Image 1 (cartoon, rainbow, N blue to C red):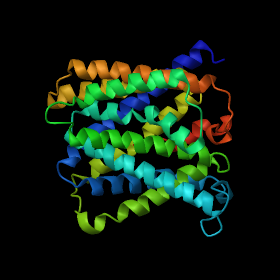
Image 2: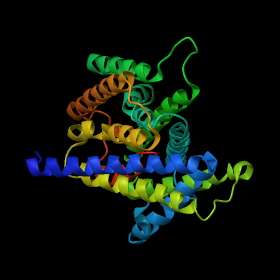
Image 3: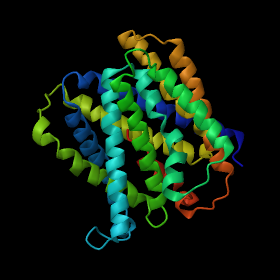
Length: 317
């Protein structure tokens, strides 16, 4: 059981991480008016890989995986590719949403991932869905409807893209948990950074635009803030169970609303507030249930020693 000091310190790091992610959203919003989304995502992955290189260089190459891609089991290689494609798709959707809707709404739609995880785990890994999970999902998706605000004209396409990003993020997380059955966390981090950089270079063939000298600092800040945010979350989750820290993850919505109001005068309506409460409550119920559930499925039970390190590759930020 973590001490009160450990819980306090863990909460501080989680809130710091969410602040950094919201700050990253500000950088994305500024540069998105000048560069295509495909260019922003590519440089996020390229700079992120370069920032991780010194950390990766300190480790033995044998720690990266069960083998190099040429000798890696086809199933494991497929899981690495699925994790990269899902995480990259979430990144494209998230960045697109940030550029076109209120920052707080984009942050909240990204945080819908926990609502999709039980459904994906049920369909893929046949994990049981208890009545409590169904109640949590019902509350969560009611919150999503509050944010999407469907009316006579239907739901905003941009909001649907943001929601789709949450679904892809959930798929990436479930894939990571499956990879942890045989793969070291360092390898999951490395192969995602490498594969995502390679794949994100493909759309540049039809959307390339050379960033200017004033745009490069924004692109570098996106990668730096995302990397620092992931490190802060790792520091927090290494000190306390994820289930205890889950509510702190929604501070990114608070910071997003604050930045949106201060910089772009974005209003904070009652739908956003109520939707945030419902989604946060649902996410808390899901995380509490997963913490108390017996680890009957090895695919969904990552080793405790790798959970904190694995966190650096969980989010599509």
